[in-house]
Image (cartoon, rainbow, N blue to C red; front, side, top):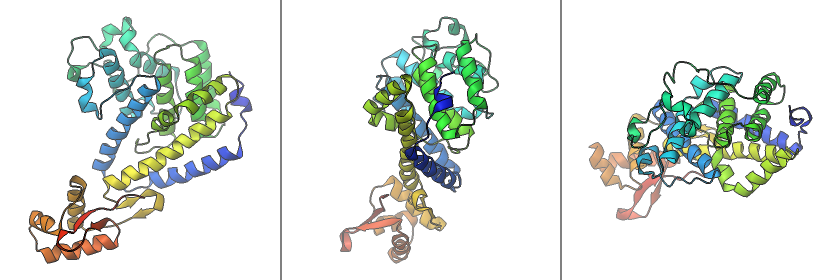
Length: 341
């Protein structure tokens, strides 16, 4: 096994970053998110994360959501995106225990890289000319992990070592990421698998209860630092990489906080540790403002079938709670959701 796992030096910067992550972890895991919000956030953040993952491999996907996948020209890129989305959406299936297994790692490698795997053609990989909506995945994907071949002994030893390690969990997740990139036996899939394994590991440890963190976008933003830090890791110096990885998690929590504020209509503010309780009618108005960037009091009153004076009273309460803000004056004034800080 690499000396990194035995001799890694925990810097003061790492300790501060771990403290912030622990703070965010506890706060986010106790958020009163409605199911419809978590489903929307999960789909949105998963897709963004997969796009970033492919971008780090110099494969840009110029679409905004998974519904636009049929627009992709490359069948190979289309299947890689669909495969990674399927894996990331199924973390509870693939990471249902706290220990990684060689079976899991082997299966995920095969699944992601099946577009170039002739053997896997029998197991339902994407075929040219097949409609995207009919793209087949491996059989019994939601039931159990099949055994496909074997991974090199190095990977098996690495997984066992990781399971027995006493290293702080979030740091171990970063080591998993970098080490899988270093030792992956499948060239095309190695970095994608590294990101999925480390994210799945965080999921099993309760760092992302709602599966909404997007760590990869930060690496795209800091792409030069990302590659340099990984190079230093391979050369035996893991410090820069672990510090960058921890910073990516912190940024992911902060970015996700903004998304939660938006999707909840500013009624949940994770960074401020605030949950604003509002009435059903106020919730209806918030949903209207989420769909319409700005609305006048008269427009809201007509939709709800109430008086203008009634709406004025309700909006005053929402203004006081800093959920909405007023734009303009007099008869031209309009309301909109208050932007997240």
